Length: 241
Image 1 (cartoon, helix red, strand yellow):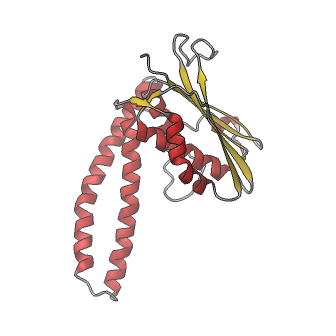
Image 2: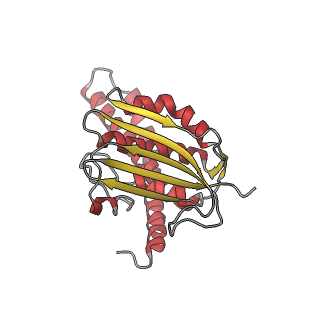
Image 3: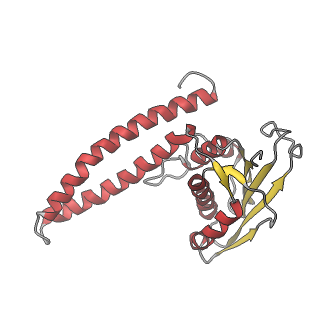
């Protein structure tokens, strides 16, 4: 266990992850060009070429893992700007509907008078897609996902995470999936925690989302009931100006 409070441990873990990912990435930068050169200089139907292609596929997966590790390690970075959450959701809608699939009903309920919010555009897109991916995976057959946006005036929220003097923009993602037991819900934002026993699952999804929301000056809430579904709420601050 890394000593210190929760934020100190996460910062230390992000720093360690960053160093490991960069070192691993440096190795890939040597390995991939060498494999590509070997691939070009082997006979198309040879056994060696087949093995080289398999190894290149594996390095592609390694590159993806490294990218996700570095994204987690970026949790302390700044660079926020004013963004329109509704516009982002509408731009993502074709991707979201494809992600949900035909068996899941997807509804958008967007506030026409939504305030701008402070966020990093790409991080917000990735966070929305990550949460939706979790929602989709939690629905065994048919189900529903609702995405909703709302303005939350200062002083309305009765939660220790909210500031009484700050307006927030709320992005809610609700699903009718399996839901999570309390012990999973309380751990789901912990880095590298996952209940999915599948290759390539690093357990950084919700941890990365949580880091992005905090970096933007907001906070994340997750409520879930086994057998009924999950509600994820992203509270992002309204710019002071």
